[in-house]
Image (tube, rainbow over all chains, first blue to last red; front, side):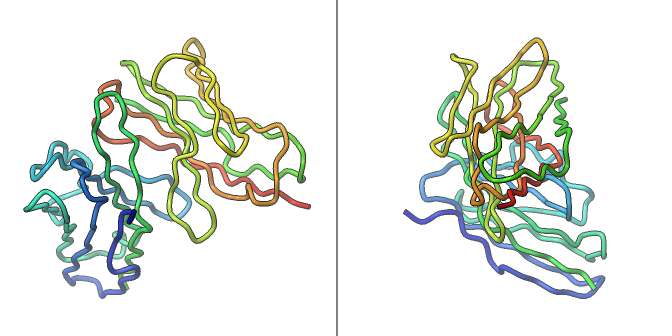
Length: 115
Length: 114
């Protein structure tokens, strides 16, 4: 079956602009996660959705970052007033959330470059 | 809060040699443990996981990892590596409820040379 998909694969923007990154999870997966991976680092947690609600947004770095999942499937990560330090690969993952097993399936990522 | 330390950022080895990628974690609660692999120009893939039961877990391509609670370690080993094992390897933990975020280490770049 289809895996997690993310669009766009690459996004180049200018400092101060607004961007939206989209994630389509695996069908039937109730949990959805966003991570950010900077060069030479491991993925860093941003936010986790269970259904439509954000169950844990403790990783969002500041109020310029916001994410939604209005129908419990597709999610959009929104970044306002982008800064050069926001440049990274943004990863999305989804999980079935069966008790005791939190295997997360990752998408290919969106590479964001802020000039 | 949990944290993960991967002790080696780069590990160069020759083909057919054994390899160990080290991972230590810190947590005040029981955790699940994972190794993910990222091949060049590909996304993260789960390699193996420890949830409960036997402390030795294996992957389909010959890797194994052993959960050592007393040493808070989850080192990854393979007795004989192939060129195709060249990739970035990430160790990760999540809390026992297993419903939330993964905390990743910084990664170990395994480079297998002929």
